[in-house]
Length: 547
Image 1 (cartoon, one colour):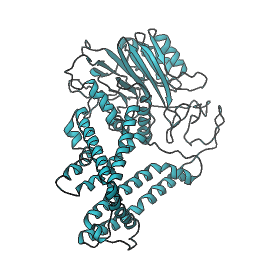
Image 2 (cartoon, rainbow, N blue to C red; image 1 turned 90 degrees about the horizontal axis):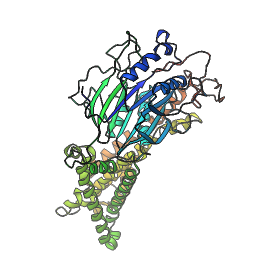
Image 3 (cartoon, helix red, strand yellow; image 1 turned 90 degrees about the vertical axis):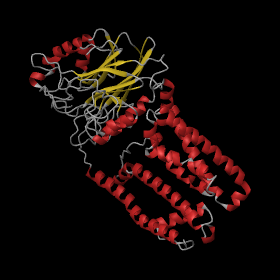
Image 4 (cartoon, rainbow, N blue to C red; image 1 turned 180 degrees about the vertical axis):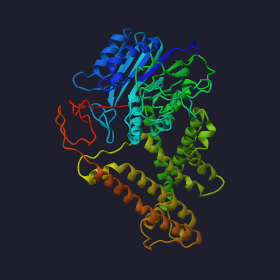
């Protein structure tokens, strides 16, 4: 395939760690094959995973026209590095190394991860072009992979906004995995994807999609090595490199290689202009500082609006401050209207967003105030705006909660995210039920304000009511019956969450083996490397098989 339009080429390769006992496929027998492959497929950026220190030395000698970033630790036997080699025509402006864990600055791993996995990110510049390249290696557990993807998104948020981003690596997961879904929701496309995806351009000859072959050279199997990108880059070629030399392969993984053309920033007619991309980053994403502040401001405005509507339903407050509350409500409504129009403007498919769940909620959040011109009292329905607080989870990006003390403490921490979601869901329901009951029953039947109606909804949902206030109309009694039945079902939710986490915590077994380097204990039964310093637990056994 012609590469005349290619400005940047990138390749990812799991090198297969050199300490592995692979017989005729051992490192000493295949390092010359690696050199031949790299000479044949020279690229601007090369992302390597599973690199032992002596392999890193070999790559440094072989790739004489390149510089390298990544943590290269010779002091720990068995250390596997993630390295990014970049051509000397590029300058590295900033580089960072992370562990995929809740403490990324120190050697560590997520609970459930077999190895301490790493991520290396660099900001590079060549003439007027800047690009962010990340090289990652995920563990095997799907939940750990999903959490790791979220961590990578957060790491990227520490780099400048709006630049092209390319992520390469061994994800140990197929393109339909939870991890890929995380990246896809952040607008990342994927080269060489056999699924509906922005990167799977039909003009490319897809060829084989297998990347892990176990030194067998097969063309069917797992596709676990990816190249993801965003930020205006356009793929002009992609390939799974299946080169062999005398029927021998440089690694047990096929490298994946892609070429990208840079966006023409001088063309006003391009499909997705730079200002729309930056606006999209701020409004729809929370992985940048501007995006987080936008979402925090939005959530505060939503809560203010809901509070104003509830206060307006209190007759005493309405008589003394009704005009002021109305002005605030209209101000917030106009703000939300502008935000809704901006959301439609900066997405590529406005209709798809408008018909999505959050798109419908955004529309319903502004309609009641306008409808109140024609239907008096309907503006109270703007309490549905509380549903928009669901966006808070993008800002918080809650990860799993690790437990290091008692079984109960671990269970409560592990289930905290689910419990928070549960409580916010219950709060949302009682606000909506209370508001509807206020409209149905009204002050004549004791429902004199929305706060009082919410009080009734809370009491009815958690018990069967105190009897101090009760619906009198048939429609109100029907809603009360539904709320009471729903309450019985809701009671079981937190019990099941905590019980499940406690069971998992009880089943968690550890050994008494101490790390020979840092003397730490409490390792998993199948652990081969220390979870705290990454040193090999049994250096003399020669174990350490990875993928």
